[in-house]
Length: 112
Length: 113
Image (cartoon, rainbow over all chains, first blue to last red; front, side, top):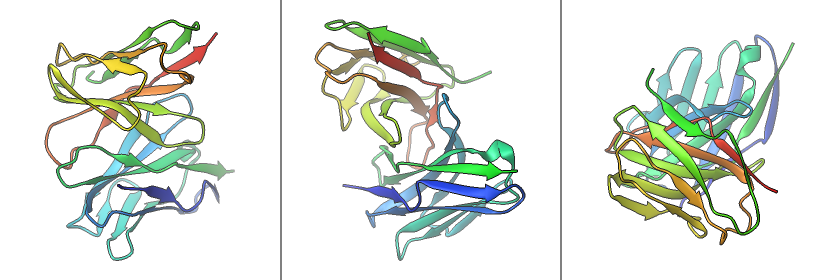
């Protein structure tokens, strides 16, 4: 089965700096990856996704990088703002399986 | 606005009692999912349904039951057989097909009295 891990359970950054949140997965057949943001007391909110035929995808202030060789993906947030403070999860799926495997999350704190 | 509505937001269960959590979506999604989240942990899949009148067990289905009588609705019952039900329960839905993101409701927090 799949296991998904995050490198750091917590991350603190200064407002305006860039943030990088990392995630590692175990199944080389994994081909779909999603990043979610979860604020306290709310459900996860979709941020960005990437398929295995890509190694980079950009959204508004966010970039996801995928390295299939080492089974690693990262979420980069540019010019981090106080509203970015939340728990960030990566989720991974393989092939026709529609089940997502979630990492345990990284708590991002933005310092003034 | 389209979205996923979970109710109630907070729920309390007495010993030996079954409780049902509601999940409704108006996104016209075929697939729906129930997850459990414990403090400091990721989401674990309880049940999922890809089509009306059909559902499959996830990783932690014991002590839970579901039904899918309508496309829009996927209620979860936490039975008395679930000995550690205190958790945050999240419902999600997605379009059919590979590489479709799941979209989540805002959860129900279940506690034991």
